[in-house]
Length: 230
Length: 409
Image 1 (cartoon, rainbow over the protein chains, first blue to last red):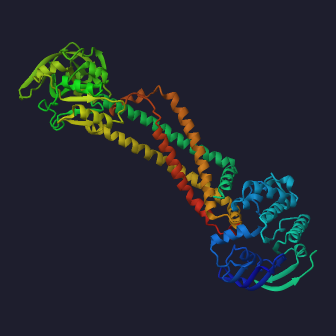
Image 2 (tube, each protein chain N blue to C red; image 1 turned 90 degrees about the vertical axis):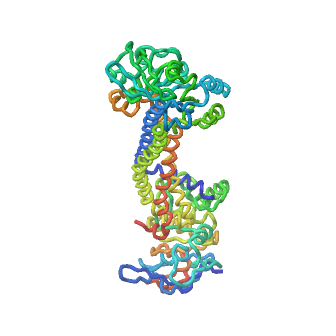
Image 3 (tube, rainbow over the protein chains, first blue to last red; image 1 turned 180 degrees about the horizontal axis):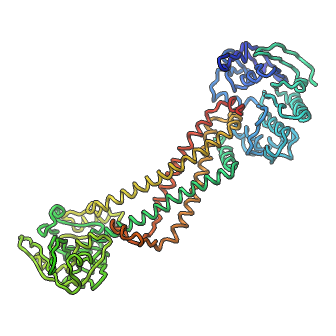
């Protein structure tokens, strides 16, 4: 079963008097439970593709499907609801709300979803234990390291058990040890929960963890490699 | 609304993210609210005093006249009932504070000067009961009965006539047959009024004495009735109409003295304008604070939108933050206004500028009056307009495209 399907996706940006093709007829299928890395040099189109899959950006043409639902033609409200309930996000930086504690950040999505307080508390406690941050639940982002913050972001992304997690350069601001720990967490969650991960990165160490590596250049997929994860 | 708790939490915590800025803004709102309420209480106190003095100094809260009296205030236009019947009818209606008077134009002459005045034949006991001007005698004695043969005149008038207590004057008017009616009186007292014009205009004498002079038996030309509150005259008006209205005209004080009536409306308008003007000055700071708060949080707002928070919840977050700011500022402002006014309830001596104040009927002691409606007006204006002002930055925040906001540097 496909978790993500992109059919002939195109997206062009205007930069000065130049048209930049961020996505150039991209076709791609990601199956449920996969751990995929989108790799491209800066400006290669990986973040644009990730944003199109996550409903954060609307392609100029083509189709985006999440499971059985076409999302490129949804309204802003419907896209927001889709992101809230079906997709987990981990961004490169500024991932957490600074005025909320780790626990509150994890509960944020559930709170917006309307999950009752008791259930939220249980789930956030469990997920923080799972990512190894149970002791830091009451700390605010400024009181945690970059790696710990990204773990909280991962916890928030998966706490509602979305089928799909999208991560954009999640290790960009982490040292190698923290990056390895984060990727190990992704692998563990991928294997134990069968969560599909799509990670945009140009970090070779991150790519080594992926089951599948899709390479992009100038908005096009130039290589698609099945690989044995590290 | 699922997000309400998180909206309130975020709004409250974001408020204290930049302590210094929030405290400065709270001080600004507090000072503005204090200024609105405190200044309004001073002006309200002054105007209320002027109104009370004005109403006390003859009109009463409700007056009864012959229907033509206001066009032609002569002795020919007398109230239909005699003063004795009026007393009985009002007593039956449970109305105790009233005065039945003669009020006719007259000429007063001393041995040196003559002037046109309004001659009031009064029942001194009744005038004291309604706290009218004739009771405030500054020198000499007051009138002792309706048969008193003396007159009380204003200190200014005495000066103009070059007369004084103990001296004789002549009052001359017309009887109902247009014959000259005159009589000599001795000046027994001098009164002082807050309005100089009143001191020069009104001359008081015993009602029965004037009735005899004018040959009008027990008739009167004016009945002034005083109720509990000069601002609430409708029930009194109805009662008086029912008791002694008949063919006569029964009017509230604001219709009789248009200047005083207008003053009350003008005061309410002034309070609103004053409050809005202060708010406008404040609103620049408020909007600037919120714009800065939103600007500093663009990425965070983008993150929340990306995670699926609805734009309406982002808008709500900024508006609630503004609401907290305004509410806290108002609490501070109200508290300080209350604490400022309470020690001043015994009055503020403004005698240094009293002469100027007296020109428009204000006394030399200012009694601030903290009225609930003025406080409500100030608070409602700040809250409502403050929330409206916060809509612009809040709307802007809710319109961010998440993908652009997240990458904003």
